[in-house]
Length: 499
Ligand code: BES
Ligand code: MN
Ligand code: ZN
Image 1 (cartoon, rainbow, N blue to C red):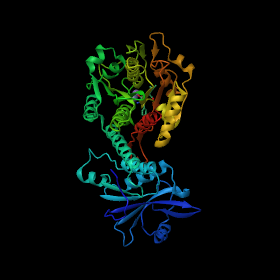
Image 2: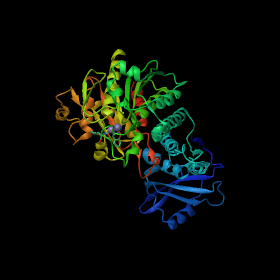
Image 3: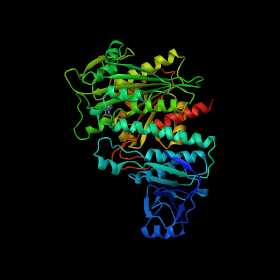
Image 4: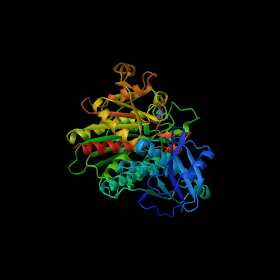
């Protein structure tokens, strides 16, 4: 992770500077660095640089600098007083870091005047220094290894605020990168059991409690949703519950995550083309557990109970058939008309359990579920904006305000009451599929049936934004993004600061 340096005596290989544009002219934003930039402008003009966001231009460093290479990272329109929005800084730092893959060291001299701006830069570096090379040959792996060491050139004194900002950036990017690793891992290397083992290994020394329900316990205790989705697989289902209860907790939140380690669609088998992407169907579970661990590591005084609903949706003579009726933990029966709508089945049990635990503890201040739930989310909002549904507009606004500070994109979507009737069936309390149109909302309306009206609840559909398929951007490489971790942590931080 990035360390801070105020002086500009450095031995780093590369130097990162910002490049902006004003009235059609290039503006070099060299932050706290002392480099002479005049001669560089001509070179940049000759190279056709524009200073637009996401643009990376590499030039040999002029004589007299310790660096060999200068990386210009686009900041877009020049900001007055060099005060750039946090996400612009985060992405510029991230894009530069990705362009530095395979390099040993770099100095980042990007404009910033506050601890929060510094934190955004550090986060961009932390998130940009990620690559999934676990299964690649040695030489290829080397080429793609993330930037090994980064220094941020800064004039800020290392006071408590700056230290906390750097710590936040370090911890948060560590956990986002853990999510990315889990989501990128192929399903033959990540069963529900392995997911639990890996997550459990991360909990030592964080002072959290861990509870795991195996397939026997899930069956005997009535978790019919999770059990019925997992019963077709040789890799049995699990419920992982992590509980962080700090002394003097200011609020009590519960998180629930969809953890389908692979989604074939079951007997509603998905088409072969693109089915490989369904190794990412546990992104919600990975994100909520990682967020809980980050909140614990940062010692934020908010109590968190996180529930990862883990199963593999496969085909076999034990698999759930279309038309099967199951009984969920809530006692409600569900006709499984479509075994590919499996996420809502496991989530139903997770929500019921979270609410029951919350009640025992004196009530929940918030319940948030995160799931790669519907293809309809991608159709409606695309690959960068997650769908946000709720029974409590105030809570939704708090979440959106926290998201604003992270650069993660969410958009509020409705839960129209009339969609409930489309889930009616003569044979059970509810069917697992309803109207095709508005599929994201139908899934949300299904989940709402398992939430008690008094519990402030958010449903976050991250089907698209959990993964970058084609075009890397900012601090995101191709592959898993780790979305929601940073917003969940930011929400806890803001709730803690409100007292
Ligand atoms: N895991 C999928 C949703 C998904 C699609 C995630 C694309 C990421 C990218 C989910 O389990 C699913 O299959 N949903 C169905 C629901 C339908 C059967 C009502 C869908 O969206 O088609
Ligand atoms: Mn499915
Ligand atoms: Zn799924």
